Length: 114
Length: 111
Image (cartoon, rainbow over all chains, first blue to last red; front, side, top):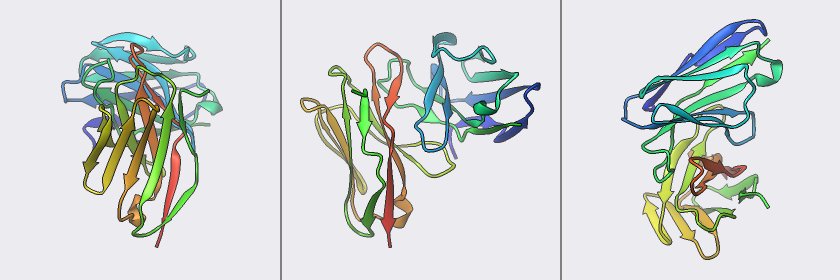
């Protein structure tokens, strides 16, 4: 069991659907991250939130829209995704954004785009 | 040169032997180094953090850091089949608020 909780665990959606991925942590961490991971590849950073503000967007297409409602929650809104967006989406958190402390990952959401 | 480099493997080690995983990095001012284990279909799990030159031991795992040579390694003693996984090396990029991951080394422990 991880201290970063992601829902849902699996999601299948069509290219015209709108859905959201959710992430929650109660460790008091002030930095939260979204990663995308394809098979046999390392996690690929998408977004970083530092103290609830978006600090890094790694040139992610606008069909992915992050949101940080409060210090414990992180959402990723999905709209008009493409089949190549099928992947494991990982949320992570760390005590501070300076990377002096490790990131802790949730179990991920396995996303399939039909 | 990639920022963080690992041999992708696969690395095969007999059960009970020592598995040695290596990682080199390019950013001379990196201060924080992490090893994650990832089982197939699962998320990365932190197994070691190291910040200072030298060795850090935790059970069967030993992380070694040499900042002058810019490498960090992970030793797994008395390897077990349950250690079979992909091991990811992650290094902080100074001032960039992110970790850079290596490609990962796939380790197989043979009974």
